[in-house]
Image (cartoon, rainbow, N blue to C red; front, side, top):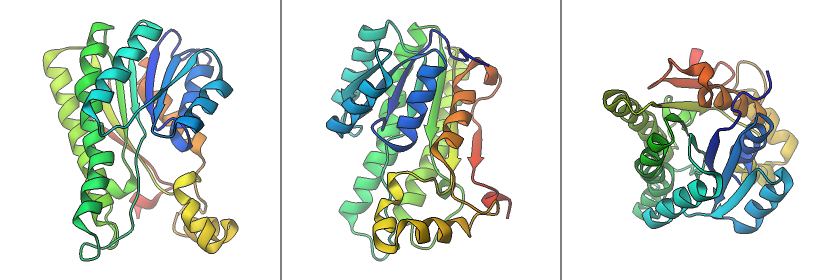
Length: 253
């Protein structure tokens, strides 16, 4: 099917790379106008230029409430409304509860959880004015299954999952036409794996991580972008407050 989100306007955080970039490219191919935001201005502008005139870039620190207000307004001013919010910006951290410093804990939560809260808070009024739409928050399989050395990341991503359910119930109660769901990927071949590739080598890293996945390999960004597209589109109009594991079978174990 072509044009699955024809004439929709989407705002995608973390759009300069990884899942955000893949989703932005797919959304434009499916008929949407897309604003991508990122703290990496150079890479973000390059992605917008690569995608074409139906994609705009705005620099954006997701921990800043003022910048959230600004990018929502810029998106509406540029494209005439807002129907879809995809929150892809995030960072990872591999440390146990006794190793992690308080500042590190706060930084992970500020970006991975507070940023999602601010996005929902400030996008919902604009989306309601546009007639409703869909919020897709990118959590992680780590928001469902814990790891011994992922204390802050587990906590933040689990928070995204439950926050999204609260948002979904609020939107349903006030009948603003907005749905909210989460996706929970496992290891995906994006820049978040780069530090491991540099340490162990790209091939060894992908093979090692792939052995932990029942399906036998690391995922591709497009394999997350298509489920996000489904949740963003009217095809999923009766789905809200749900989580979709995109994990190659890990959560079935």
